[in-house]
Image 1 (cartoon, rainbow, N blue to C red):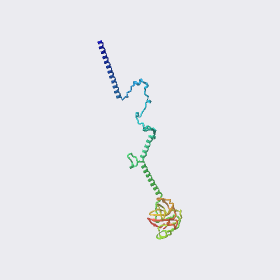
Image 2 (tube, rainbow, N blue to C red):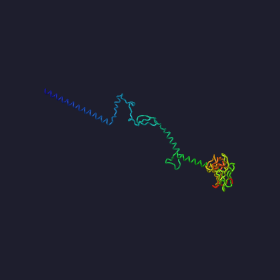
Image 3 (tube, helix red, strand yellow):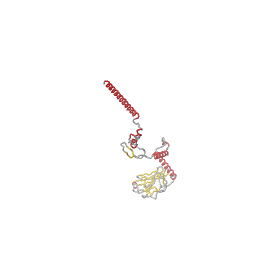
Image 4 (cartoon, rainbow, N blue to C red):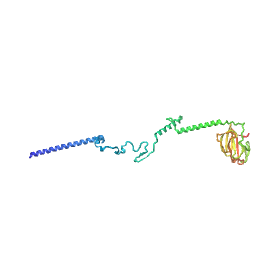
Length: 300
């Protein structure tokens, strides 16, 4: 009996040792597999694909349309769109209209055209580093030059058309119209002025006239001044040449301007209503001739 009990105990111990060895080996095997898989995941970041499983399981094939796409998967900013697109996406995900960009070919052509125009406007010291000048300033300068040229041409034409002014002491004045003398020229003695009720010297002729009557030039002349005077009213002064000037007063409807050449006998104004200095004398033409500023008798 004792022998059987000893053998039975030995068998139990041996079975326990074998079972323990199997458990230890199984634990080590499982631990090794776990560690190996963990290292593999660390190396490939979890992106290793088992192609064999893909071949075996056809039902699990990947279709591009079924994969949801998020903003983080895109290589560009979804808030912006390509050139020519009519919508954009803002930060809140809402889309809206944007203005269409200009045709790049048109912009290039316009830039070339402007450069060619600007290149044509280059002027001396006004050049920039690129050989261009501001178009606005250049155009203004060109316009000013054109105006100067036109003015010079006008003066040249006028000089060719207008005869030289050569009035002299031997020349006489033509009467601007047929009229009686109301107050005669008197530089050395006084004459009576009815409106002023006084005697004084008169450096001009005062010719009787009718309001609206036409006034003709008494000699060839160039208009040098036009002004308003309290005594003579609207007044026109003409340069006759050689220091001689002829002054016409009590005028209206003057159709000439300063610088205008007026030929003898040409109508250039009309008689106006008299000023208050000639209220009693009535409408008249004030006619004054001077030589270097000194009054002369217009009819001598």
